[in-house]
Length: 163
Image 1 (cartoon, rainbow, N blue to C red):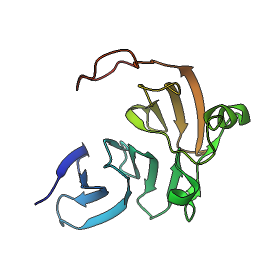
Image 2 (cartoon, helix red, strand yellow):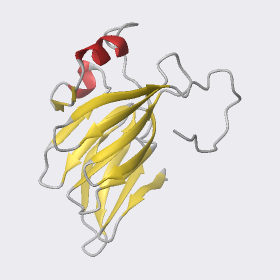
Image 3 (cartoon, one colour):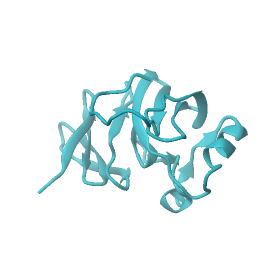
Image 4 (cartoon, rainbow, N blue to C red):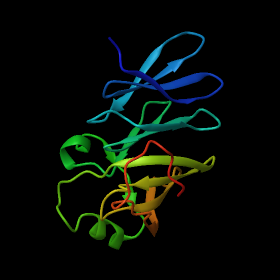
């Protein structure tokens, strides 16, 4: 039995999760391309307007380019060790994020396409590290935009969070 869920769809592709795997499927040929794995399932994803890249979120980020290059962020060293790492635009952002423990991944709760080259990311809304980030696709850098929204004291719902 499959845990299949569509994360994003474009004219030519469907980005879906199947258990902990993120897969990109071409609609015409039905060819499936493995994008990457997220411990605990990917929960969100986007496909670029020009279909040159896609991104998935869950335990960290996976940015995958159609030519096959992969970049990861907000992940433990072990889960992203063999991959290119997204860089922090400001070094203090990396220090802030890792201040509690060096080897913890951060949970990407949601993401929005800002334009064809940038993605807004909601990180850990139910923790002390609740924050909003901007990923620049061209430079492969992450920049913290704001703290919060911190939803620790609110009851869990499946409703989307405005960020």
